[in-house]
Length: 288
Ligand SMILES: O=C(O)C(=O)C[C@]1(C(=O)O)C=C[C@@H](O)C=C1
Image: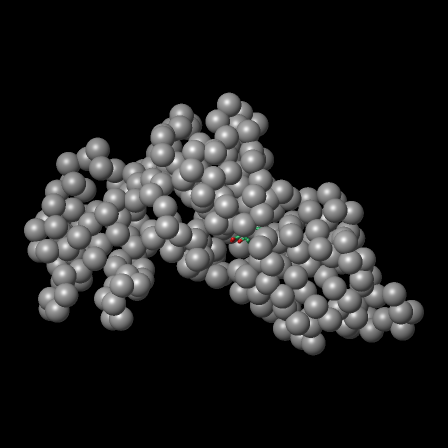
């Protein structure tokens, strides 16, 4: 069975991956996302799962940076999964609980760095006085709360973490929007047999030549006149020189077509550097 590195256990990554890949893989949990990347880069696992973008938070920049700068692992698939955030901790031990806010006793909240952007409204309304402390995953926050057994410290994470670490669920679904989704990437050196998908995507990085007026316009027009659809474009610093950027572009289309390789050739001809991060099937969320 192929080995898949995930941030875990009891995280959203684990929930999303089990839902998508099922039980025909061996899941190996790592505490840090850097370890998840390195596991496959070093050959310890065959594939790694990377949360890459969220409806409310946008791109997970740290993970994009790892994918681009630290490892050479092609993207093999992407899928989206709904994210229901939950407040997990111990109830207020005092008898005079304020009915308008039963969480006034919470002084500290532990969770992953992307979580405040996903639960902004709830945290403003109910956890205003609490300090937020970033931990390596949502599940790690719940694990620490279970060790501390201190009602003033709570976590935000998965329902599975609440059950597995035996910490009470204080409030379910505290994310700002019901349809909060995270997009996950499966990366690895070798392709895996996955179910067919109607949608294929290709991700490329384009670095523009320096001081070239209209270069981005020319890049975009290479796709536009061929009617190739871009599903995402984001500029990111190259980290080599201030003011020099690359563009991270998700394209709806495959390198097996005639049009996309031709568009890429055209972009290279104007002096841009193009790196292909992967050509892969994309899967929408299908509920269980
Ligand atoms: O900490 C977790 O539970 C994770 O799986 C990580 C992660 C992320 O990095 O985006 C995954 C999905 C949610 O958006 C929140 C956190």
